[in-house]
Amino acid sequence: MLPMNVTAMNIETAPHTQTMAAMGAKARAAAAHLARLPTTKRDEALRQAACALRQEAPAILAANAQDMAGFTGTPAFGDRLLLNEARVEAMARGLEEVAALPDPLARTLAEWTRPNGLRISRIPQPLGVLGMIYESRPNVGADAAAIALKSGNALILRGGSESFHSAQAIHAALSSGFAAANLPADIVQTAPSTDRRFVAAMLGASGLIDLIIPRGGKSLVQLVQREARVPVLAHAEGLNHTYIHSAADFAMARRVLANAKMRRTGICGATETLLLDRTIAPALLPLLVEDLAALGCTFRADASARAICPALPAATDADFDTEWLDAVLSVKLVEGVDDALAHIAAHGSEHTDAIITEDETVAAHFLGNIASSVAMWNASTQFCDGGEFGFGAEIGIATGRIHARGPIGPEQLTTFRYVVRGTGQVRP
Image: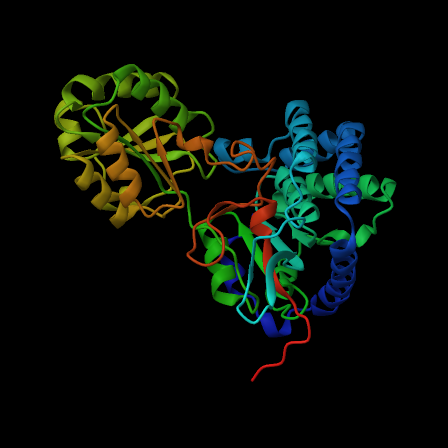
């Protein structure tokens, strides 16, 4: 994990600049090679890499055990770090699912003919070289490699120090798979050590890296946004809300909220705040509290909620601005959909927000007025995931207003260019 004092790094004097320059030059050459590869070659490399992950699963799990032995964080973050056979298999399946997707480069986005006869086409092209800085979850490296390769981009990875051995083992497996498909090893590279100064070198690699993608906690994202000399595709914290409207089906609301909060508390798609219509709170809130408490959840509740469930701990104003990433839920009663929308606008991070209701008109109002990158109706916020969206995997969840938003798959890691075909036209 990148600690807070990482902000003290001096970008201009980072000692890893030469290493980054060498890796960046290799990545640029690899990106140019990838851009010319047919779909079949890129897809074959992904399938070979999936086979290699399965073959190297014992080595990957041994490396992960080494990381887990040195881990001292919370259980929720430990769950992010932990690998097992099922999670390694999920990584492999993710690569195969990405391989099965349509080629994001083999399409025409738009075309038209001008009155002078010029035929203009807008076609996709890769971004180039991606830099990925991530924390905790070692499977992120495999997901990012799959999406980068599918979209024709080279990739430089820097995982968190707590997952270093896992990341190295995963990278070794991926590289052997790429080699089996006769692709250059430099299409995906990884940081050679846990030295935080390599992050500074990446952030200063203008001209070598085309896009930096941070995936981790708030301090990491803020550091990258503040210090990068390279364009950033970032996500804010996942301060997500589930709003239960007065016309909600109670059984559905209980089932969805339990999943949205407690399925995996340490992921960015987890619900952190429950907003509940005041009119149904006396009947529903005690049931929700009972359900979640049985799963190990604790609470921070406003005064109105505590009037119904006095045993709930009182919430502070700061609690509603907190991404818990743990088994803690903030609870607030609201006066209806517009009150819920106002709270989300004031406290949310534009990541993922959901409404539970049987009223289609209210649902349409919520979905049409929420600014979040993902808005859901009658579904768990934990569905905010590239795999669940059909992307095979994701490289992150973007919450900014530039380029892509929501789960980032292969299509979102392309830009476009224009091809103009003429018959000898000259401009008057």
